[in-house]
Length: 283
Image (cartoon, rainbow, N blue to C red; front, side, top):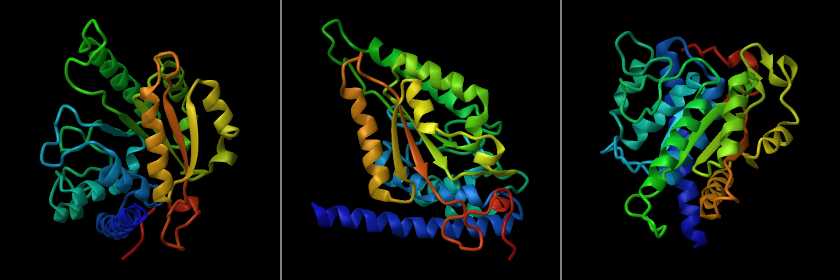
């Protein structure tokens, strides 16, 4: 069992290295984009698409798939690289990032690329979209149950919303948190990329978020804190979050994972420097 687990982690680490290389090549080719956040999200996205999500690259519209909503759409180079690595589209298309007419725009466009669940752009709206999707699916799920309470078809899906810490400063985020807590949406998992920077500086200097855990728990969410670059911790946290759906209806709750990450992870020239939020490396 331990050997198998080790092999899984080693494979994920190899994929993450490939993805980081592709992100840099994409950004250099495009000449614009967002470096720091794209690099801080790599392990989370790799774990999702190569271990945790129920999905099928050959059947992107599979009804029973889990949904991943990228709320901070400017980190899409990481998502694009992972989707290509997973087989959603040819990897040579990565070099078309931000080009006129490309399906790989600076923010994801749902109608242009398979595997993209929502279009994004305005920060702070992704969690509201995810809450709506999770609530709608919860209603559909219970409508499929017969009178005896046994499933009459299909299983509950999970909706995973990836968010930046900076966008939590948007009021809409807290409205979504409040509704999800009230509805006990155990099929909803939010992951906050806690890299502590935004375009104008450090989050705690621009508009402080702490004590973040206490605030989220006050909105009736289960809160987990992890190293966002540690595959074992990422996998364990999502596994714990999914088990919430096995509880009684009264005990259920949505889960938020605060993933502490390093902006620009993997490149000492970029790490922990907010100037690289919206800047790209030169050739």
